[in-house]
Each structure stands twice: as C-alpha cells, then as structure tokens.
Length: 525
Image 1: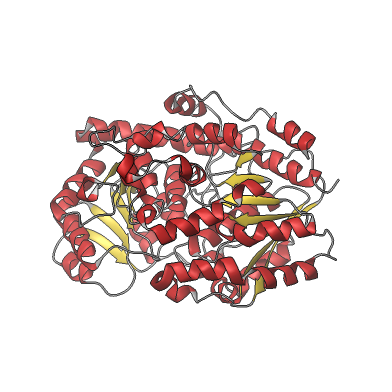
Image 2: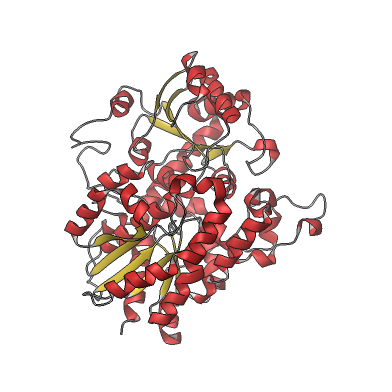
C-alpha cells in the first residue's frame, strides 16, 4: 500500500499555496467553458425527479476508461449528507467503467421516491439500496441530535454488512466503501474486515474538516488571553487564516456534541483517502495544508452539486411544466432579485423570521423567498415590500436565473457551492454547525458576500434587527451605488468561472476524479 500511496500522492494536483485566490480566479476566468444549468433540492422528492442528472464530472472530453469499478456509498442519514453523497456518486458514475450503489435507510428510500430508484436502475450506473430503519425518523432528528448521532454510530453497521453480503457476488463486486465522516465509527471496521478501502466523504468544507481533524491543537477558552488576535485559530491550525474562535460556537462549545464529532474524526486517520465536495481554487489554503498533514491522498471533486442535461436555454428550456415562480423571475430585470432560503432542518427562530420579513419589506428590494410552513413573516410581508413567497424552489435553477442578483442564505456548504457556481454574491445568516465558518469564508476570505454577525460573534447569538437586514440587503443589491458591492460581484463572477473550469477536462476537480477512480481501482489489483 505504501508504494500506491506514494504514486498517488505525487500527482500534480497541489498548487503553490502562496498564489492568491484572486490570481487563480483571474487566470481561470480566461478558460473556455461550456455553460449549462441545473437544479438542486430543497426537498428530496424534487431531487428524485431529477435523479438522472448529467453530473459535473461528465463535462469535458473523455479520458481513457479506467478499470471497471463499483463503489458502495453510505451517507449519514441527513438531508445535506444524502444529497452530497448522491451528487458525488453521479460524478463518479459519469466516468466509463464506474458504478455506484448508495445505501440509505428505508425511510430515506421512501423520501427519495421510487422514481429515483427506477431512473438509476435504468441508467445502470447509480442505484439505491435500503437497510431497515434502525435510526430514529428524519422528522424528529432535530429534537434529539445527540441521540440520533449515537444511533447512527451503533445501529447501522450490522444491516450494512448484511447488504454488502448481498452485493459481494455481483459483477463487478464492491471495490471500495465511500463513507460519510459521521458513519466512520463503524465503516472503517467493515472495510478492514472485508479488505475494502474506505474513502471518507466530507460534506462539510475542507476548512471545517481541518478544524475537526486538528481539534487537539486548539487551546481551551481559559488559555486564550484577553485581547488576543480574533483570528487566532490560524495560529494553531495551518491554512485557516480568516477563522476566529467565535466561529466555532455554539456547536463546538457543547461538550457532548464535540465528543461525538471527535469520535468520528478519530477514525479518519484509519481510512485510505478523503474526498471534499469543494474545489481546490475555492479552499486552496486549507486543502494544501491538509495534503501536507494527512497520511493519505485528499481529492477535491467539486463543486459537488446536481447537474441536469445541457440545454440550449441556460435557465429553464425544455421543461414540461414551468413553475409559477420561474415565470415570475422571467418578468424581473436582470440581477434585481434577492433569493432567500434559510434551510429546513434547523431554521431561524420565529422572532428572527419576523425581523427578516420586516427588513425585506423595509428594504424595498425585490425578493423570492423559499419559506415553508405557516409563519407570521407572511403577514408582515403582506404589509409592504415587493416579492414572492413560495414553499419550495429548485434552488440551483433559481440561483442561475439571470434575474437573481443575490442570495440570502444560512451558509450551509451545499448551498454555498451552488451560489459560487452560479456567480451570485451572498448575504449570510448562519445558524449552527459549520455555517459560521462558511459565512466567515464568504465574507472575509473569498469576499463575495456580507455576513450578518449576531452579537458580534460567529453568527449564532441573538436576533439580527430589521434595520441591519434592510441596510445590508439594499447594499448588496445596489452594486451600482456601492464600490465594495461592485467588487464583490466581480469576484463572484471570477469564482463562477473557476468553478466551471475546475470540472472541465484538465481542471483541478476533473483530474482529482480521475485520480480517485484510479486509486480505488488499484486496490483490486
């Protein structure tokens, strides 16, 4: 295995970390790219209807086919984790000779829908398999997060192994397990028993992965002196120059949650490689530092987002039935609409929703808001503002629409990658988990958005008032009157081109997908 690692680690994918991101982006902007459009999922049912995506990894001319390879993928049973794994498997399976089986619970198979399984089986490259519902329901997951994580750590191993027993006689048999970081406590053991390499998929940013991987390097709160540099994290963990300790709250100040996170990451070193859903040009500082520290290869294959077949009209040609909100977007001026979507698993408080609604109404900015359920925010919006509120949108499709000029987001990594790929600047309001860190990257490192900092910290404190929301929304959307906002749009446009160039033949992610497939295939030989 040592010689294999040496050969893979010598591949020319790591760039000089001293090259500034704006230089990389400006160079990428000159690349010739093929435009296309796609849709993401705010509901998994909609994902099912688009499960026959042409993925990002399929773009560009084909390379010589690698050996036939079958990967078995197991996501953590949560929306963004399942979505990230499905997107990755489509990227892999778009290459010649690669098939993928995605293992979900019976509940998740139902949520994804029979159409997804049928479409995937027909395509013959990505299929869904289910294990029993051995973990609590998705619908109550947020109510007992710690209990849910413990169930994932302790109850999924046995049914997953039984499923592998069924898959083993197949042609081709499994060549590798691709496991979400938060199923590693048992996935590594399964791989060891069966002689299968385990590839870690991190649906979080590479920056967040680095925080968890190097968590033992961080000082305790008592060790941090008053008046120290607020960007102190970078003094302990390489490649994290913009991250502050406040960005680790509140999730990383909850000892029980930290213990569970670190339990998963204690198994990371026992795997055979790690896969990031981001792309190198976006997180070059963190990725280059990790590649120096990790005991095995790291592959960046992103942006790991859903992709529809190429269409002549880039935003919604060829649809059988157009959603009303798309027709409404068609009627709006170019770049005039602020798209608002703040997640579905953990949402903002009712008080914060009211402030957001009032701020949007006061700003006079035109908006499209994906807002589920009943909320007093709807009543506030009826009293003023010019916008549209809908329960669901095809997010990537909306972000790529010419009329959308900004994205008000909670900074989950999947959504951030979609906005980057669409070239849309952001207004961020993080809630928990890795979102404060992604928000920090957006506002301070990539400089393609404004962060709403609650209580002056990492974005998860009290309630942001309507006055601040209105002022920042106006500033973001009126780039003609604000030089900083104008520069922000220029950088977002450069990142869009870098994102698209990464997945073309010869691009950083295209090369890493090829290297990953070859790396997995070598274990069979």
